[in-house]
Image (cartoon, rainbow, N blue to C red; front, side):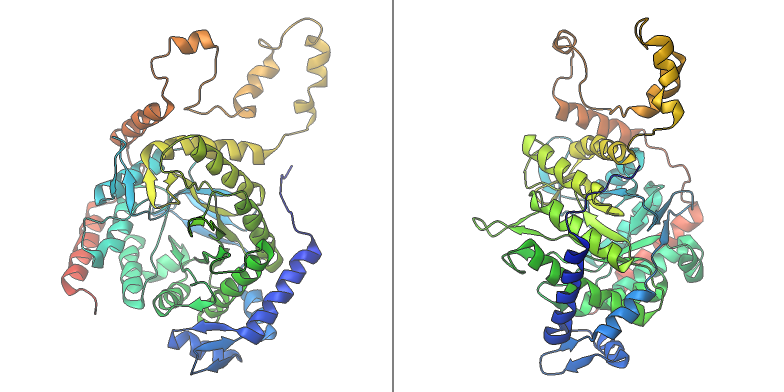
Length: 479
């Protein structure tokens, strides 16, 4: 049984698609990267050199979208953990690249390379998190090589899949070269993609120079990339959800077009991290009820184009791990899951609109991800599960606790989290660890300290990666 939330009708999606085509043909998008402009012009788009605006005909859109693969895989470094996108799976990732960390002491501070390492160990240990994203940014290392430290530490401390980096051609190519050291070369990296790229269109309707350079590099290297606009309804996009979806679509699709023109069959994600603008503060709201509608609409559009989708869920505007954080995180995560988002970013560890990564919330959100997975699994209605014979033999005699049927199914049928209380008040009164956040911090510390890599990074590869980082740091990048 598949549980799916689809608030928009087929005709609704077709109208959004038609409005998008109108925007791209009449208004166009600003493209600031020369090679992308050349590719678009070569395919039949028009370019205004005074405004840097490209107008893309419907035939070019349809041709390029049709060449984007409907299925692809992302591999861990050792190849033993594989995410298969476009096959009906819903995967959960940790929060991505906050600049602050809420430590085990509860203090919020700039994140460090040690935090990066610890979060990789933590996400690798938590059973319901499928992808070890860049849970925070290492602000205590040279900014020129911070992105390389992220990949190196991911390969060293996590057995799961991980992220990449797309800011500028030089930095992106260096990151790909670093990943290729562990993969055995660029060709092997392309055969089994290991790095997930992120290219954010600039709302409204702009493709920046640096990120578009990174987009082209990833497409040609065969690494999957997602293109999530962060439209703010009422701020950088129309105030209506439908209007936001049209503009967001008009920002995502040109990225897919450029990727396909750079290399046909390049793996791409339709993507979104859009939200509402709080008119009282001017801030984006990623934990609002409308996020579910936006993610569901984006998911339906992605299925319309037959392209896997990366969305967001698990976000909150709360500054601490509290009731607000729980409500907003669960509602956005569950709605994204029910919408059928292939890859849900920010599923665990996010506070402060994903500006801060929390160790305690990462642990608590792992249970939330497990609950969402259980809901998506639905219920089996086979003869064994219907249990008519069991009811006939046991129902009038008493309970089912000792029934062989119960013993066969109780572990697989019910999700049991690691953190939430279940039991009588009398037992809880004698429970020493009543504070669930304190309990989560203790468990996070234990998982980090006891973490063991399934497949350690071999010493020679470790040495080569470190030498590469030092070489890039010494060389630097043009200012």
